[in-house]
Image (cartoon, rainbow, N blue to C red; front, side, top):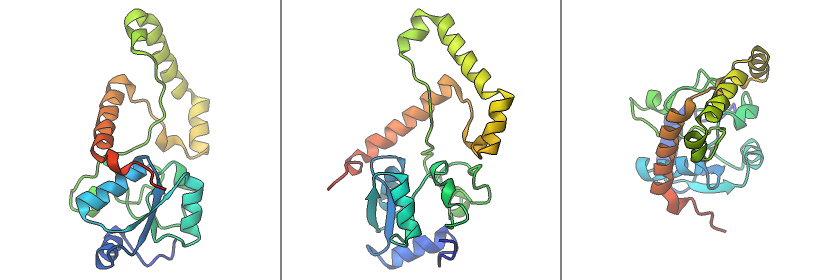
Length: 196
């Protein structure tokens, strides 16, 4: 909440360490937030109670209702809590365009890098398309870039506060991002199983 006793991420982490197994951290089960929670536990020794949710609405409601001490969210889905909750840190490699004043993990912790777990929306095609029909594949890429660069669409993104989330990164960079996320999923797969 905006009046949270945790003024920054270090004070939250200190409280978790001083009260092991006591503070309640919420996140959506089975996704990037689940991986982030696993990293915080295994790599940074934070012992907190995990409270998992099926969706962001339930997670945000629990935080606003003070059923959680903190939550691990995502910028795009959690823009609705801006101004109603205190966002302490961005668990990524760069600041969020939606919360530009919030420091990254590396800024808060003297350069320690947190894996980039950014969520992406993408268009996928079978790999044969590029091999068998390179002209169609190129047409798809060109059309996608053209749509993203359309002035009316750009205005819509600004008006709806989605502009910081939309960018074209292309197939090569997408492959790198997907590989790195796959490696994280493999590393923490045992903790991604939702237990009832």
